[in-house]
Image 1 (cartoon, rainbow, N blue to C red):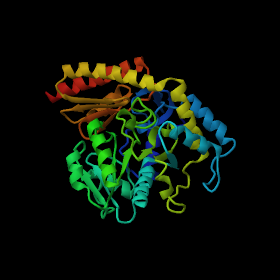
Image 2: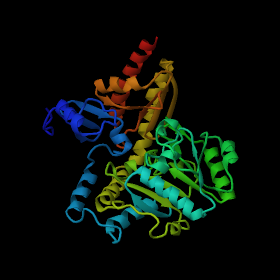
Image 3: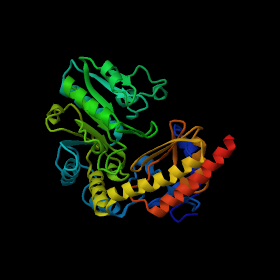
Image 4: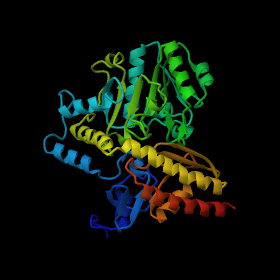
Length: 402
């Protein structure tokens, strides 16, 4: 039994069976403690976590500066409504915007951030322009506008009618986007790297073409940077790899290193369109999340984690490139910073349980893609440890597939 546990994993599982809606597919493990890149279950087993917090724990588990910042903040203010000013919200907005552009609005999640960005695009462009173009295999959240923007039919089943005003184009297909644009189109919304869709990376020429198209037609270009933001790709924001500046970026997941926090940032001239009374978020910008976010940015800068992200991405690439030469089941390898997709010729889901049995936590997405979102502060030794286990598992799966 781990010292942080008060009962067995099985006892917690039985409690969930009685009182928690079973909408998540859960593995039969109760996590009780996390530190850095590792977590422990109630029975004391250690796991190397290469998918911490579904990408939210961008600094791993319980990063010291974030823990101390939240502890200090909670002694003074836990929550203050947005009818007042707080120092922490101003400081965090400055920290984000001076590393990107414009002005920030705070929410609690990626879905909330995308909802706000969609509202802002419609408000800014006027009532005659309300359509948005999004992309197949994208993912933008679970609220109604965000799930409609998510161009994957499996997320729409049983939820109709959905929100009107969305059209879908193939990713990296500029001509298809041109065909969908009309006088009612206000925005183009996309992830610069599709995460849930399988770590698909946008072509630089595609992004530049979208920027030009938006400028020509008076539309806003919105980048969903919920996964790519706050250093995940080796730059502060994913758009900075291409030099294409969007009009709005949406942020969440790693924004406050695991504390619930979302935001969108828009260009200065767009900000006044979000008039008082048109949008709000009760807990958005709360002092605890803001303190955690400031400490997250400080940690990334003081510990040189953008550079570490790039170096560890190269190390992952070396491991998986060598493995790809060995195993024909690996069709493709897609890496942008600490966003890693290993695309298989067979279903990837069995790899998750097999790795977990060996003490490594990973994810499978889009049927065939092994997906990793390691923390920015992962070490070379931890990369080697994780890749060794994943290689063993994929060799086993290749043999089973014949």
